[in-house]
Length: 425
Ligand code: FE2
Image (cartoon, rainbow, N blue to C red; front, side, top):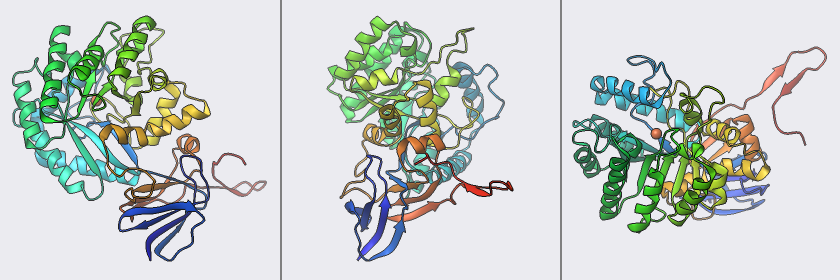
């Protein structure tokens, strides 16, 4: 007897009419048209069954603080950092936990079941770290929360930066972070990358660094990150986040840099919603779009994910844990409109970030965890186009969230009809 049998599902790889059988929290069979007794039967009615969404880049400690103590007037990264600095002395562990749990509720409802969150380690008290470790423990039954020690005020620029970051790792934070473009000089930025990568290599940890998050075409920290990754044998374990300067670099240098990144097997996270709003703020017209070169990085064989980055915080005044909204923006900014590119955008919020996080048992093959989301759409491009309703969300074979289908009723005398927005045909 199966625990759960999902039937008539479409899968992201294009197969239709598929059954997914679940026993003991794991997928035990994926095959067309299976009929078998099960405690729960779910007819997907042709809907898209996807592995859960994964957010490779988020800031859970600042999420949902919008307006505290004031709103970012210039819209820049730097005013956001200053604003967060004003708020930090007022933070309490309980308030951070409450906001973070609230956000995780949104995430689950949206089928987002794994988040890599940076946690600010700049304050010696490490309240943010204490709070997010507690959140990590509480949400573990239903959401994988991976934490990155993030020296927001600079590893070398802020007093005690390295010591605070080390203590955060000792307390249980998983991944080594950094912010080289915010250090005082290019040389100090490079030094911070060397120190952090050596620390990660010594402790067997992954690295995920905010890197070259600026419009400065001469910022060179991605190059250093690729170099240190290769020097220390960290290939496949290091991610560069944002990399917005790549947007502004000249094509000649970018072609060299992307090859170096591929040699180092760097992971890449673009954050479309935030990059499109924070970057280019010092431009008149034309305004640079500021997102890194996603199609070119994919073409070079790099693992590229889209992240949410911020929701209702000093840097971004919108957002709702909706990774399909993130992919929708990424698709537009990168002009990834071909059928294949739209599929890649869907992969950038599912398979690719799962690889960057090193998630075990992720996917829709036999043996994987029975974690998935049923979408009110029939294929990945349609899911992105509609930011499709998450009809049902499953974790280890158990339903943990559901939503009513989106449907409108026309009240026209001439054309009474209920309307959904599926592709024709
Ligand atoms: Fe970030």
